[in-house]
Length: 178
Image 1 (cartoon, one colour):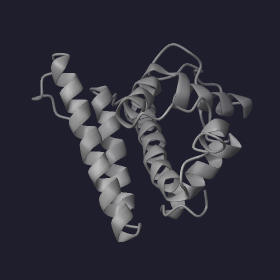
Image 2 (cartoon, rainbow, N blue to C red):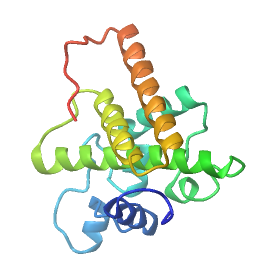
Image 3 (cartoon, rainbow, N blue to C red):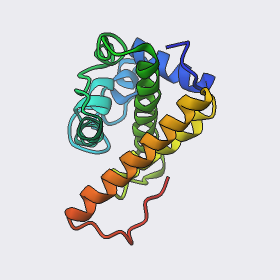
């Protein structure tokens, strides 16, 4: 995880995620916080596991990854940062992890927008586009051939997502904001 070409802030985010100490509502309650324990996207209790893997918002994002890349979705942080990509070449694993960390970061940012600013994503697409934005931004830290591949995969994921939503009747005039 520390060898990934990511900003230091994101490496710490990933480390907190792995350690299970991100300040989700369950962790805040364990620290004697007196707030609501419910997820901002649904009615279940918020935890790291719920927010990043079990919530309907996260499940949509992971299903998009599965649908587009054909990679089985991880079931937990331990699985994500452990055996999930075992068997794939190291370069490919690193690129996939950059994209996956961008997805987790996008989920975290959308959660924080909802909790602190009362701004909810206007579409699941917002999370996908936010994740691809971050993956493209972080690709600047990669080697040239890896950078181009990551950017192209982000564009393809965005196109596929837009196509799927269009087939479902989504109006493209709705703006997807980052």
